Length: 298
Image (cartoon, helix red, strand yellow):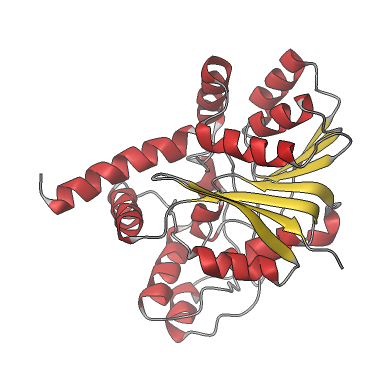
């Protein structure tokens, strides 16, 4: 098989993994947005056809025009930190619909947590869960929340952009007898961080790789972590970048608006360090990596 064929094959496998587990691996649906003004002319020209002046409160890759803008700005060295137009969330619904939620719930009932999610739960559990609160960004059907509640957490809050997961999530909660201990909200934490209460533990499982502006995402969530923050992400190496590039090429051919991103881990940790979160756990797997951080004492 040629190198291109290998990359495409890996991309197909990676897409299957992402779409079948909380990454929105995605089991975690992203639920944040960005706002502000672009500082790159290529970006401005790509989005100039929009007539809305609102800050973007949905995923920037939900619409093809903004996907083009993101790609253009990246390829030309532009700043992808800000978007000044609003996206339509229906592009996200193509992937994160009821059928997708049923598949995730079925997998969890049959196999339990995937290995990456289990590492996240183990990291949090090792620091003590009794009496803690949990905030998960894009928790999907909520399997991580269920496991953390079983281990001693008192309450959990799940934030989503779409409501496609709610039916399956409620079924899982009722089966575990935990339906009164989880609040599920459709809320954009980056657009309205003050609308969410802080929690002892913040979880982002396979969500960073679906979001172009990792600084905005991590900055918004870091301020809500009183004790711990843990997130997973794909390897930032040549193979990982090739897989993401091939995966996005396939999505473009299929005329899908969804895109994935491969962000540098050191830069992501630097953002969290600005919020006094220091890394105390790292797992570097072939498919997914995990970073666990604790809040530094004042």
